[in-house]
Image (cartoon, rainbow, N blue to C red; front, side, top):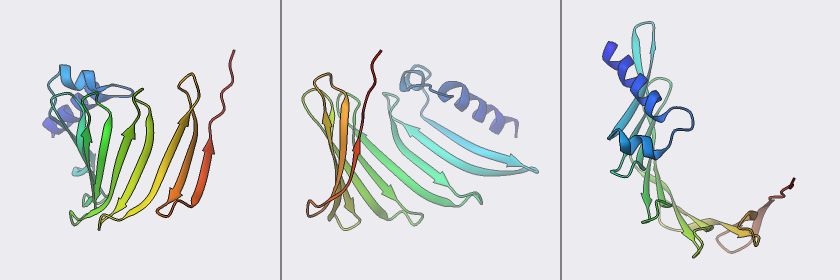
Length: 157
């Protein structure tokens, strides 16, 4: 039990609130397991696996009872931007895949969502102003029909 508490403390100390991948890389952390201990019973909560650059490459989530709930797997480009996320259910079956596209200014311009069979289900399309601030996220279905539009408005000093 002391080891579990120590592991949880090290995870929180290195990842804590608003910690970044530099801390993970600096401390050589390969993974972090979180668990809840209640009435002497240990229940896994989540496990995060990192690559050599401190990026999260796999995130496993467990239910309140400790059963596998879902797994997320991530891939990154050379700049450390997420370019792919795969989501698996509790049977380790792919349920959704998201591909992210960036422009030459490293701004996210598109997210493409695919179902378990590889069929496109929807896209998020992003636009930016001349300052590089996100101004809109438009969600469209596979046929291009607009589902939602989110506008971003900024106030300046």
